[in-house]
Image 1 (cartoon, rainbow, N blue to C red):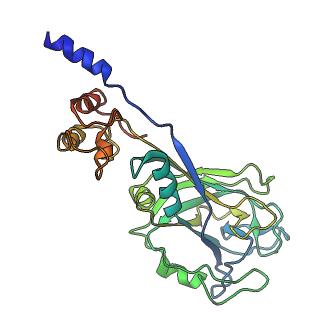
Image 2 (cartoon, rainbow, N blue to C red; image 1 turned 90 degrees about the vertical axis):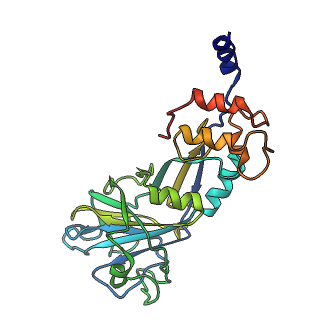
Image 3 (tube, one colour; image 1 turned 135 degrees about the horizontal axis):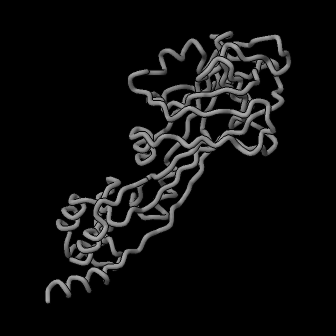
Amino acid sequence: MKPAIVAIVFAAASICQAEPFTVTVNPTADTFVREAEPASNYGLAGSLAVSGHNAYSYASPTQQMGRFDSFMRFAAAPVVQALDTNFGSHYWVVTKITLNLTEVTQPNNSIFNLGPGTFDVIWTANDSWLEGTGMPSAPSAEGLRYQDMASLIDPQADKSLGIFSNVGGGTGTPAIVCPLLLRTELAADVRSGSDITLHLAPADEEIGFTFNSRNISGGRPKPGLQVTADSIPGDANLDCTVNILDLIFIRQRLNQDVSTGDNRQADVNADGRLNILDLIAVRNLLNTKCQ
């Protein structure tokens, strides 16, 4: 009789799963740096740039303007607020992050290069840099400059999030979509609501990628960091895997108030109670993982 009863209870332990939810944020700061002008800042420019040494100026196909790197800082706090509102306080896991960029086909200054190629998006551990107030027509000495880059980046701590390609003199639309590798460091920044710094560096010497910055005018699209999260049914301890640790997590909270502390996470079947049905629900979902 017992196996039959258990089978009936298993069927009754239904799971309430929310739909994936996506939040997009624009940079709170961004700038590019130029090897040719190592002491100059361009933090208020309407464009950012990633360029190798072999790329040519958009205005002169015989003139090379040298290497460019770009930096963007995003605030994750608004992402956490939106996800908490949708799923409940930290009752979610990040499943995908993309960076969306819009290429500029006719930059308003001849220092910018154009040309197809590849670039690296790098999660940067150090968020302590200043955007600055310089522009291509009036560079500033205040803010991040090329000569400061060596002290900002850390090859041991920083992590590549993928190599991507630009169009190279294309129409500028649609956006260049960069699905980022979901590194532990990046996901942790999102979950904690910390700042996120992305360093865009040339991956080959031919690339001349110029794209809209956060200071672009005229309602044109700004860079966007798109974060998608979901609830994982049965993942009570939010470690992205349903396993025995989730059973232990729930067992320690049986018959407690669902609204107390992190008990809501243990109410896997969302019936407002913490009981054996939640353990059964997890048992049915063992080995489920995030994407």
